[in-house]
Image (tube, rainbow, N blue to C red; front, top):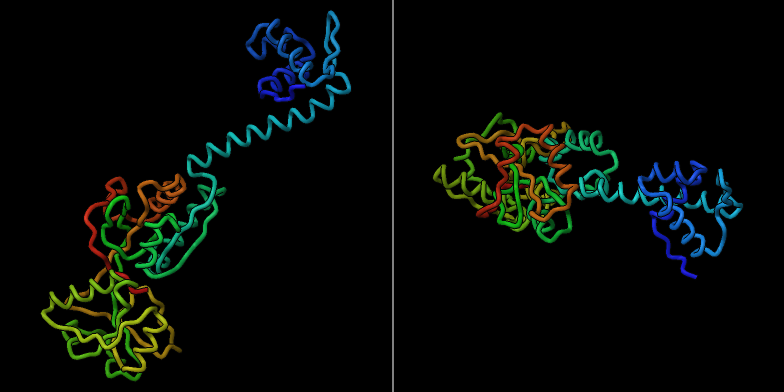
Length: 316
């Protein structure tokens, strides 16, 4: 017995079950009545049971037909759901997206973007990963995350980028540092201070921005310590009475043992960019649409970057 059924056979059977008439069911399906009758006879032979009791004027379902009708309706419903799910996933409206971000991006653009994404794409689930820009750039390249909002310069293909905002770097010192009560600091004064920096591999953007600003100012910096993360940065700032750099989006808490102040002449600024792969899944397009709706892009979203790579600022 061949029980491999086609969806169209189920559609034909259900049309007859609904209309209780071959002529009306055939018209509803836009096929000839003989074709419909042949298809249902073939279905009954495949199943080895009679589904329909036929008379010269009407059709009724047999007990086997009644039972088959319930399951056939569910099969077609699930088939339609499968079609809808595939189309939704292809449009980016269904599935999941893994989003990496650093602190500055989280404060400036990610929160409103997620609210908009949830409103416009409620079936799309999100996974968030906060971390440093260097590892996140690698994670995007390796396909471990779908998109990252980080400090970064224009990446090489197959990565694409869109600048979404800019953050200023400020100086962070201990409350016991001579600068603790200062309102601001001239970049040139950093020449006389021990500096704590995240390792370039961890934060290429901040590293390069700080040294580019020093070159513009015509000074040399003394790096007293290179560290792995923000926690180690804070510890070394207190231990060495040194100066570190953080974004101006970091909250200032009265109970902190650290204080921050603006840097001027020049003000070191870093770009926050969305970075994603050229072959990204459709969900990335949905995220970018939500991002464009809430973030004042410095350049049109259509003008996506993707050429020569020069590492960019980071720090959180």
